[in-house]
Length: 50
Image (cartoon, rainbow, N blue to C red; front, side, top):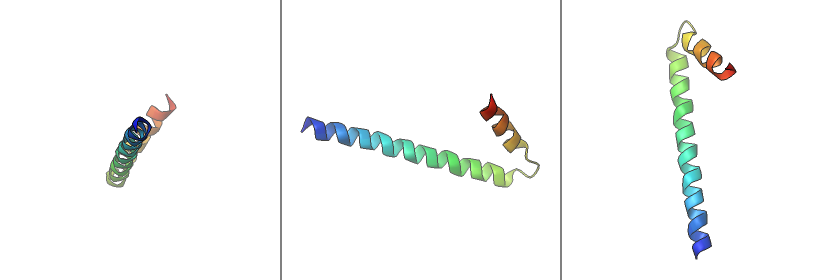
């Protein structure tokens, strides 16, 4: 029984991370769509390279 509860907890954490990641991706897409001059993309790329 304890094992199942532990597995459920891990699954919940995984699902929460997945949802958070999807929200970040959607936010990035919105920023990029709104970003006519490519400033946000340049900032993100600079941040990723560091």
